[in-house]
Length: 247
Image 1 (cartoon, rainbow, N blue to C red):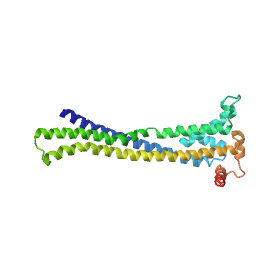
Image 2: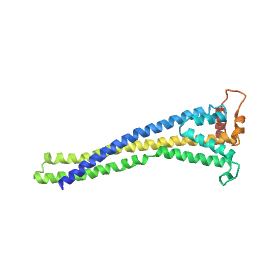
Image 3: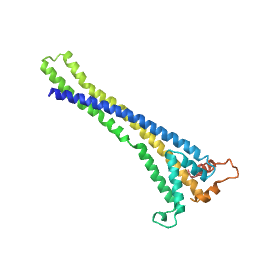
Image 4: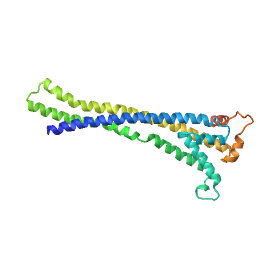
């Protein structure tokens, strides 16, 4: 029985060490993913609103990567497909705005799921690691008490060593759980922040195309201004002013 208790205690510690390695590898990979997504999105939004017209914006969307660029790609593809439809199907009975908003929402959900992928693993490790450590500690204490009973000596010197070793599992469990919980909370907030930026861009994207009547061919001509250096940023400024009036 003593050998079994020792085996369970040691196996628990190794399991927690494995969880710790998984946690830190996941933290590094997730940090790279979210940082890259945030950087790509900010760069694309800046480039997008510097486009001279919608045709230029389409080219920029197709040339870049990242969550926001993919949302723009889906939006433009939806409008292009709507223009190319020569027959009415059930989907085309929707208004162009409803169709565009629907596809943008679906893409935003897809991007959020991609960014959230694997986060449940951190939550699971953070919630369960302390209990796994406590589980190992229980068997460690059983082993320690059995060793004390066999020695027939219950002095503090004899008791302190085995009990201290048993408590190591609980300490490791807590040490594994803390960074997992902190990382999970951080990535949840990070994904929410990126998601809010995607929602803002989608709203501006719909408003931009609404000004053009959701018609890409005629929209590009309408977006041109007398100044060749003018960009879609002027349109964005108008959209911002409209939001302030509505607010």
